[in-house]
Length: 371
Ligand code: XIL
Image 1 (tube, rainbow, N blue to C red):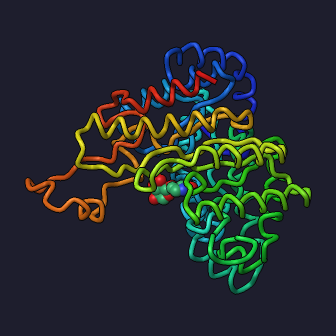
Image 2: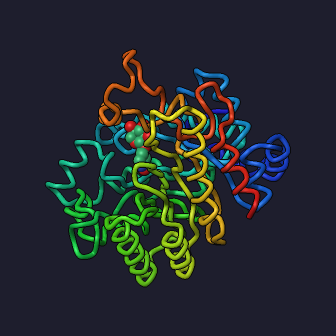
Image 3: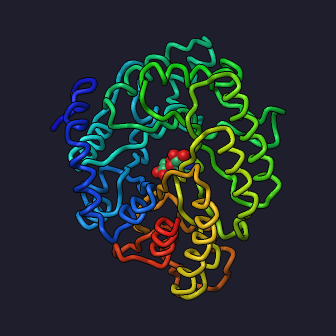
């Protein structure tokens, strides 16, 4: 099956959907996807199609464990439209064909993100304050895959603490169009995707740190404003990049925040769960326990909330994670690795580099199925 034209695969996907669901869930027995389905939720992971194509063991694990797939890099503006009007859809089409062939759903991550605006678009938005660059990009990408993408992160990371009173990040979109760029992006996304869920996606709301307290407050204010203005916003993605260097997750604050989001009639997805480690010198089983315990505490609080419909991890195995052990990490433990090596990979995802299930896998599974 190929996707060369707008909506070409919609029919096929819709026709096979009911049967596919049954089949997928049966095949997933004992997996994260199956655990989530038992509780009426979904499980997914992000990743890159090139890696899935090249590594059979990873591909098998992804296919077995998930209901949803999320393109880690392929669906970002800078990747899709390197020059105005010249669209580079090869990787994304590959990703979407893989999803369609294997009857997975896809989260569309992401439409507007300050960190992935092609340089030509940045220049143009700044100079002309002209929406047409965004309009043409939305028109090219949103309808292209029909209904296969049923959740869109329309705006990613709109909040910036310590700046403006309304908490909006001073990005190129704000500079060009003011705070209403968000309203406009949602209205336009709705035109092209009448049936998809349209979402804001944000990070850094998990800890009892001044910055994260502010972010929870400012994000809630933004969601309230969008709701009050009738913007077609359906849900909130909480990225959930846990970080053991920050201490423990503030479960009460997170619960209260999610209740407030629920009160706005918005659903919530854990969109990018993973864990940055801290104690790299500890034995591996202790490190894995730290990671698993924190994820357990976090998901226990999060999945208690009925607004939360699913969990997505940012990657599936430690072989590929955007979270790396950095020179700064190593510098915190002078003399620890005299052999010149290091602690190996960051161990913040469900499977290790050999595709074996780690304690955090079972923590996620337990929490998904216990609610
Ligand atoms: C990251 C990818 O994982 C990297 O491979 C890429 O180089 C940069 O983007 N929050 C997000 C994601 O919303 O899109 C980011 O993904 C990680 C942080």
